[in-house]
Length: 130
Image 1: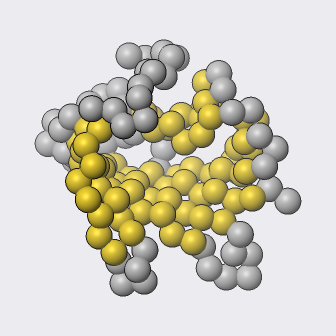
Image 2: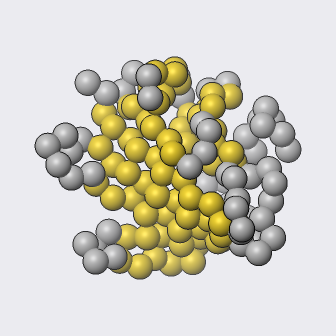
């Protein structure tokens, strides 16, 4: 596949993505574990605390011994527009991404996964638009 290819159609629980359970961290935040092909995925959503606590940070850690060159994370779909420092989705949600260069492809926000020494990390922050 290429960066401009259509996102694959799949059933909600695709046979290619295997759920491997979850664990709770010190603050009882879950880390969900998945596997797709030879890539292990840990997905940790957590609220961002502080005075402006209207957002959620999602940390994805990917690892594997044989990592693909063309793996992408779809961070959002809908009406997406680039905004200073991030992307506005459906005029409701501001998304910022670190750990990869996010781009708009049609009605999707995609992030290429860049593995270094068999691992990659992407952080996505979801904040309600004001």
